Image 1 (spheres, rainbow, N blue to C red):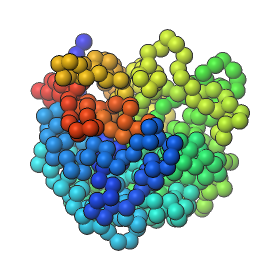
Image 2 (cartoon, rainbow, N blue to C red; image 1 turned 45 degrees about the horizontal axis):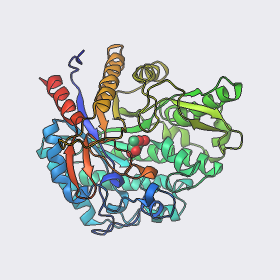
Image 3 (cartoon, rainbow, N blue to C red; image 1 turned 135 degrees about the vertical axis):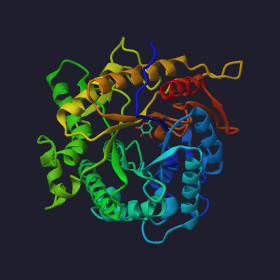
Length: 441
Ligand code: FCB
């Protein structure tokens, strides 16, 4: 069954600065927490780093060509904060801005609308040294950076995404410690959760007053947790997971409150006026979705539980992530039911499968095509049932540095040979190109 045309709608792909740019020491860029973390022994599989990554900093023209041939109307990328403000605040680094100026100009020349994420986890190391997101000061640091960036690029960029997946950044970076900055401390985790919301609110407010025509939003990773076993403890922990992962970011932004069950843990960090500042109107909500989380109580874990692999026989990606398009449709429907939800963009969805380069020099990734087909159809069902979805971005354009897992997990529509930097479009690239053509005919 083919996917009937959805109009008006933006089809796109997404990437993030540290995962693709490389050139980490060039043109005045200073280290981010991901440079520090990836150069710390035993943090990343096979000790890989983003030092070179996809070398996109030097190859953005080729990558835009790939997108032009793909036919996408939009591209979501993020800014490396320490490339444009090496110390995180104060003095600007002109060559850093030059890169993003060129990128934006070249995208527009190719007819591709930029969606720019201001923070996709690569905090300048100097700011981490001053407390990072555990400090309330991050609110001012982030909004100043947001103002400077939008002042420089906002004459050509209309769509601004404040944060990428604050829950993942808070959780993996500050509770389990498997991502930068590698902290595992409950108080820091709750402080970070609140300060992410606060920084986002301050930036939204500042940008809104600077230019009312910008489209401002943020991107949340939404996945629902279910108990992995029938126990009462795991059921309670699945609720806790939904509070911590989803509701701690959705509710302050859209309803002006924290979920009641976790309020006592965040309360020590809330000051008068914070909740009002956090509840800023947004023009769109970015939703990233990958899987449903299976939660098992684990009393000795910092947050009281752990996420475990889905039970058999559910199909999974090579990351052991459950493949379940119906769950995607249902959570989109639930978002509409529960919240006064602004228009939604699916700012990330995609899959890691172990790709094989065939003897014919191609990558026949039928599994990725089936995944995307299923999820896009599910999104369309949600749309037909009244969820206002305006666009869909495949994660990712290119195979890239997948954080603590290094280069092993391949999510791209385009394979990257990391020895030669050769780009090889996979079958899924041509499938997506044809889908876009048919949609836009
Ligand atoms: C998301 C991240 C993105 C990428 C995908 C696979 O959580 O936003 O950078 O790692 O997962």
